[in-house]
Length: 358
Image 1 (cartoon, one colour):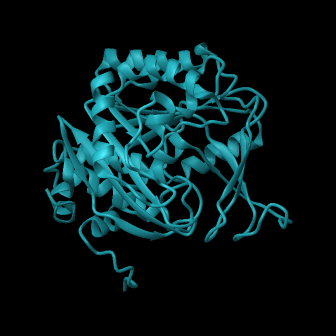
Image 2 (image 1 turned 60 degrees about the vertical axis):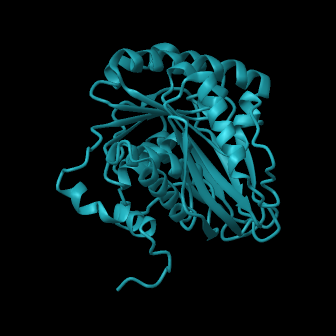
């Protein structure tokens, strides 16, 4: 099915619609110098909120799905402001738990041309990092849900979070809820050895594995051959091999991989691959002039989840939609993808001119 031709069918109810997706993880306060200023220049910071699973929830909401985000926030004005910010984007926040003393912060210095972006984290002791297993009643939280999404960042925060994630996954299995996981390796949070150990215990519960060009290598030691992301050289067959090995090891139904070729901090090639039942499907490639790449992978995940529920079984339509959604996000400032369903369908259908819409 061509995504560009299916919008009317979807509106008429001929295609399946997801009832509810639940995402779980950390949301942080993002502080960023205006424009392309460096930290050393900054006299003020723009303040917004963002985080992997929250970004996915917002993406889903903007694309028309029902999305709930679950986390633990401090019972102070910043925690309330964060919850309200999510509500403003149509996300269900009814199961956010309040407790602890602080919200994690990340400082983002945007790169340009040959100067890379720089991120500094201040998240130790955040409310979610200190969460306990008793904070979340997963049977109630997941009631009526048919999709659950988390990333490797959440268990990497340590404490009881690996066990909390496992608790959620066991309930998902009992309820027949589809589970997706973005591996999202973060070397500043844990070692490759620890990541492989913890994530290896969670993967048997996962139906859809999402990764970028480096995650599979960092977490499970599975690398794409003949590929150099820094030079922009990507070998498609290498990624097929990665997806096949991940599937063989963990029994995933689908493996989705983003394909980024970095020309500079300002210009990237962007595509993706979906692997299912031994066959690989590649989306068209986009040359993106980057506005903000933070959240690009999360918008890919959101688009993928949405499309898998719209065009179940049509892998080419699914990957074209997911890549188009994430392409558009990287032209939008801050973490959240504010692209509409109509805009994503238009781009996936071939309208990439960027001409003014009147």
